[in-house]
Image (cartoon, rainbow, N blue to C red; front, side):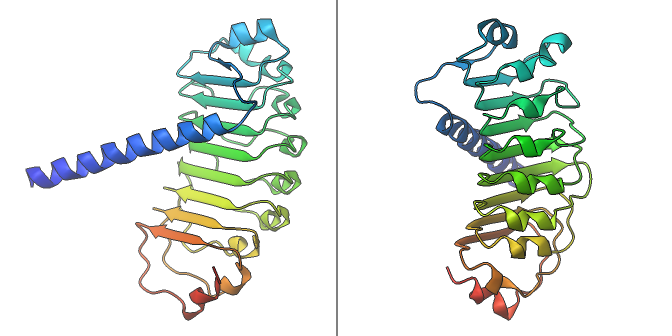
Length: 236
């Protein structure tokens, strides 16, 4: 039993390291090549123009400075983690140049207000939040390629408007209660990579012919007893 526990913890540790490295690689992929990564919000605000990338992981943020975040109009890449904030700052959606947003271990309850203004977003990654639904207005994000959503404290509701994002290729949902395979996903015909892990998914619908571009489907740690015969219709 002790050996099994050691193996289990070793697996979890390796998984954490791999996830962290992969997330860092995604962060590095976006923004102007060679641009400085600011790690201090107060300093970034004092610079203003030309602040393209910012990593505020595990930083205690001054509330007044946090509310001024939207003044960084050139900001393209932003990572938050463990900042003890529960909502996005006011006018956050004014950061219309933002292409990448990731937040870990911040208990946000909603997406940024008026998110449709953030039309340059390519990548949204939210982990350990209290968000229980993706807003219908996400359909306005015409350049969005990736949505990663993990570890909520509630069920997760997807919107049928996802179908209108013609660039959306990668959806990853982990440790969120969904019960059944979300039918809304069958309308995202551009989807190439779909990862559902620990979503309490019991059944799969039989509409895989609507996912002609799907290349990778991962259904991990879900109580699925059988697969529909039509799954081969996801042609790739």
